Length: 181
Image (cartoon, rainbow, N blue to C red; front, side, top):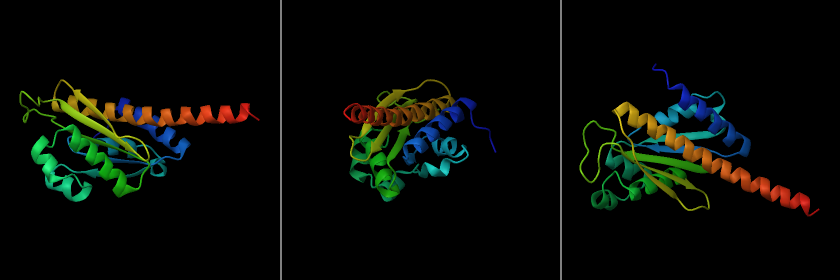
């Protein structure tokens, strides 16, 4: 078994601990990372309290079949697009029953890039219950491994930011309730 990068597993530990603290559950829908986000999260002991499942949907037909990504969207915009990333995250959220779902689709290289969609182009999307779906676009540089590693780091940061945002609001509400008593 290959060892996962320490910086990513350290970040995954923070994500899992934050999710556990908040009673939140996470699912993933991955294409170009091939399950690396899920792998980092499940590398953490006790992660089963927060991590529900991961979908590795490398093929377009599987994105449609498992996650409900419209084949028309893939044909019109391409598998590496904001709309596909968003529908992947929303599909993972719906299928898993988790509180939040992160998705990734991109071109890790070294082949497959074009002028419009270069190697390193990645879309991340975060879907959550009762919140608008967030879509982020990145163009990472480096080797295939570098791009995939950067993508996992960005995904973990996006999840963590969302979890902490929710915690801050809950803390503010608790403070307001306590101060009005």
